[in-house]
Amino acid sequence: GAGVSQSPSNKVTEKGKDVELRCDPISGHTALYWYRQSLGQGLEFLIYFQGNSAPDKSGLPSDRFSAERTGGSVSTLTIQRTQQEDSAVYLCASSLDSPSYEQYFGPGTRLTVT
Amino acid sequence: AQKVTQAQTEISVVEKEDVTLDCVYETRDTTYYLFWYKQPPSGELVFLIRRNSFDEQNEISGRYSWNFQKSTSSFNFTITASQVVDSAVYFCALSGPAGKSTFGDGTTLTVKP
Picture 1 (spheres, rainbow over the protein chains, first blue to last red):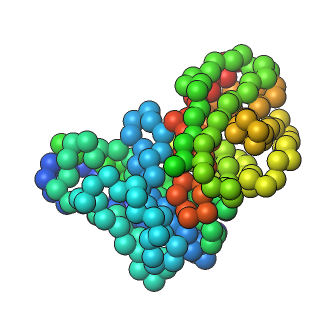
Picture 2: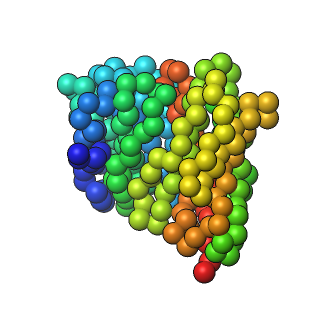
């Protein structure tokens, strides 16, 4: 079946602009995660969704970052007034209904803020 | 608070050598889940193994084996008879019941022919 997909694969934007990143999880996966991976670094947890609700938003770096999930499926991560330090690969993952299950990762969106 | 430490940033071995990747974790949860993922040069992370906090059985899968020890908060990963295709970044991860996932910084393994 189809894996996790993310769009766009690459995004170049000017400092100060808003960007929206999209994630389509595996069908039937109720849990969805967003991470940020800077060059050569580990994964930084941003947010976790169970269905449409986000019980843990503790990882969002600032109030410029927000995420939503509708219909228990597609999720969007929005970064407002982008800064150069936002440049990174943003990864989305989905899993079956609890954190005990392994996560399946998408290919990521590479964001470059100029 | 959750923390995962992979002290080995980079490891280089020659093909057919055995190699162990270390992972030490910290958590206040009594129920938690541990994972290893592989990120090959192509980029996408791939799941390797999962362990629940109440299951300390070690596991072997082909050339891969995992040693989970709650007493030392460690979940180490051994590759036996390494191959060039094992070259990748390996991440250890910890998830708590509330959903937060913490990844280590990764260990870059290079296997030379």
